[in-house]
Picture 1 (spheres, rainbow, N blue to C red):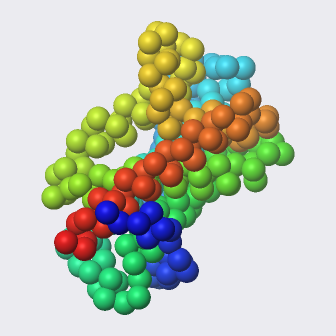
Picture 2: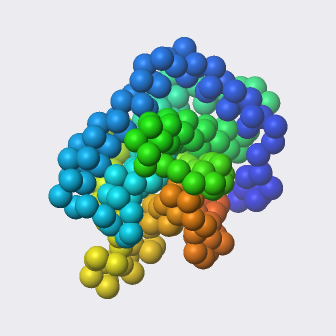
Length: 259
């Protein structure tokens, strides 16, 4: 039985974060192009195209409604992809984790650094969407800056969940189950494209268990000029997912990397 204190990361987590950022910086241009290009297509196709028929939703233009939802879903997608495919490549294909463990770094340092990097990547993606949506007038209000810590918290929770899957995976194919059974349902049923009250009661209750619902509930008001209701509750759910996912991922990765 590994002592719980071993799960607490040290300053080495920042070294892992710095290492991942340095590698990503070499691919900065194409990565940022994708971050700006994808939301532009979504906003044009859904915000203007579908929004022409929808009109207003929840008291706001549909492009405003969907822009804030896309910010939240982008954090989920970006943090999940980084915690799944990129982390698995570093762990299995490149054997980067094994090299790190040959240094004073511990499993907790590696894991915490990866979770932080997932959150930073989610923040970069979300900020790109906020910038694009602002040109369309879909993001506005005095509370936009308060959305940044929420984005980071959401990135931590989705990154932690993804790393649990990575610790269990034996190949890249395994991740399709996670996207099909978790990421895609959250994308479709957690309030990104329409308000939750339009769902049947049982579906609304199910959606309340999913982390994207709470990310949307916090980000949509902040990005449209309002303060969210029950902010501590929604933030608490995201923090709960972060801590539980980190704990599971640490145990699974420790068994896998130290056996």
